[in-house]
Length: 65
View (cartoon, helix red, strand yellow):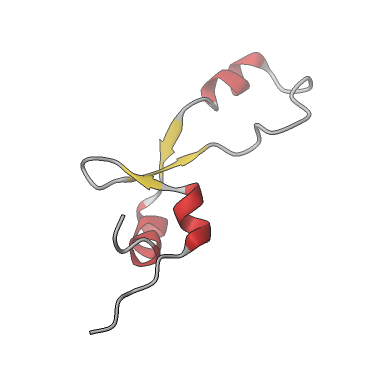
């Protein structure tokens, strides 16, 4: 059987946890941060778990990760 190719864009943006969940970084934290509330910026720290609908698609994009 031929090998599956990893989607390189997805590989750079997502990673799998030890239990197999896929995590991502939060959006809206790159620039114009002075107009955003401190609470919002604080909650945007760290990684978030991807929704189930997107996780199915990402599992196909990241076959060996």
